[in-house]
Image 1 (cartoon, rainbow, N blue to C red):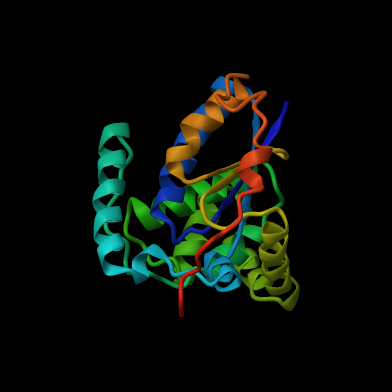
Image 2: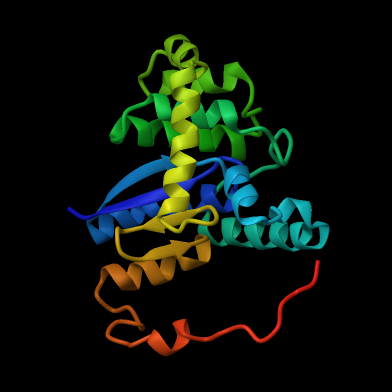
Length: 217
């Protein structure tokens, strides 16, 4: 079965919505879903961008956009304990779990606690509860999550994401094509079905366009 890498940070409500929908798509489209945690702040720093929550007008628009999508798809959502929040412990804990069904179960549990229950993602109790519900030893997982090896692994994940051209979350990568954001899931579906509108098109002329103006400052 083909694999789709899901690059995400728990800080993203759109990643929470996308994770919900991707699990259904994995069954209907026949692919393996691989959860790949990445530090969104690391991507922002690398590319010199601001996060949506750092632009008040964009943050207000995005909140309504996210709530509309959740309502239309029947996905439970409530205000998180805080936002933006520090996702480091949650991300590192995820990397402790081997890729596969158990990591996916842990990601589902933690996303639910943060975005459907309003749990504090930086609290050890939140991580421990999600771990135990996923069949993991929460105490052992938390101990390993704070080791230098796991801290280094998250930094390596961020570098690996950048090396694959990933600039934001959520991102879906099938090894050839990158899809970014919840709203790109429809295009991912078409791509997997062999119905990508861009299939067979020569985009070389678009890649040769040169800038004639640059933003100052």
